Picture 1 (tube, helix red, strand yellow):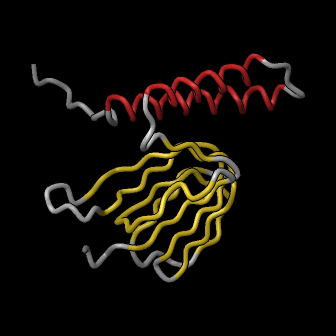
Picture 2 (picture 1 turned 120 degrees about the horizontal axis):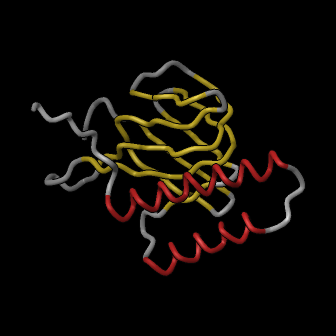
Length: 153
């Protein structure tokens, strides 16, 4: 196990979404992305809407790290003594989701977008959430987009 690993837990209304040893976490704070590494200073932070990426350690020696992506929508995080605890208002993980579950999540999100809304801000929030969900599904089905180098012509 990597000596520079720390513990990460994500809890949402639907239950524990993630519980792993990790070497890095990038999460959506209310005012932009935050990166957390081993021995990060203690921090309490309000979360915003966006994708979270955790590089989790796996017991398997062939593939020692695995990137886990979650859609986070609000909540709070506490980082202290190499333990990162995230309490999300809403979170979506497709880690063990099959095509049927993904279709169900997507249809549910589409219905929310089509429903009458109390305010334009709510509609904008749901549209952003749908865009992040679409991105999460793409990552789940094809893997994260790789940065490509421009060709040398």
